[in-house]
Image 1 (spheres, one colour):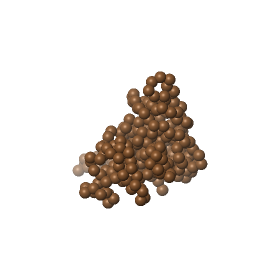
Image 2 (cartoon, rainbow, N blue to C red):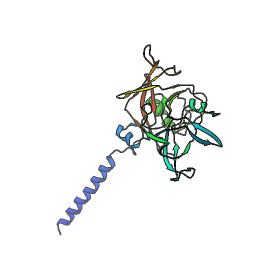
Image 3 (tube, rainbow, N blue to C red):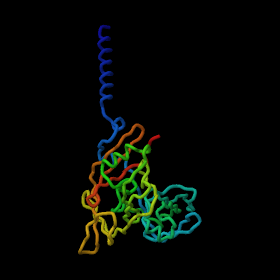
Image 4 (cartoon, rainbow, N blue to C red):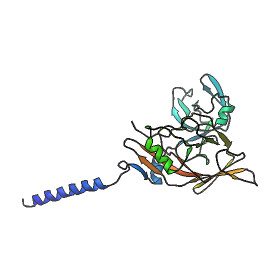
Length: 285
């Protein structure tokens, strides 16, 4: 009987100590403002994409018009059950957030080739081959790099939808292997959560002819000068220009009261850029 008060006191101390330990343990959810996160965390939450190559010229219907995508085109897409599929399986190949190039859409006759073109194809395994993520693409997100470093991201994230003005230029890597530069004009290229807005045509673009990866660096080779981007002019060899993308491997998270945003930092031709490895999960009121 005499031991009960001691046991109760000991149990109470354990509960209080546990509560204090839990209270003092930092978590990402409780942190506010800008802070570093690990690459491992980005690997966990980053938006990954799958890619498919067309094994033949492929027709699809775009608002009543028959469009033919050329054989060999790489699409960023997912296979899913859809009522629009004519396949017995009910499966369809549906493109997602990574778009085709302005150049291809213009060649196919689209009146506004800078706009997003949703593609739904009845899925037949013999017509499409799933391929590895192309070396010229980014590992996560929408494949878009925004000009500016960590302070540009912090300012954008702090304003979120409250002050949506965003004046950064951008580089876009398309699923079919084009590099497009967008110079800010009148409207922000991305919204408050850094989702691409398709508000203007590309300022300049080039077809990526070759890609070489060495550690954290990706070297893009192409033939024509890309206005707005500082690339190395090559006097010898098969290609005329080389652009270096370097992943800084220093990801950040910005936590607001009711939302969170992420950024992976890069340099492009020596200039600071950032990309959003996950923006589908950005949330707020």
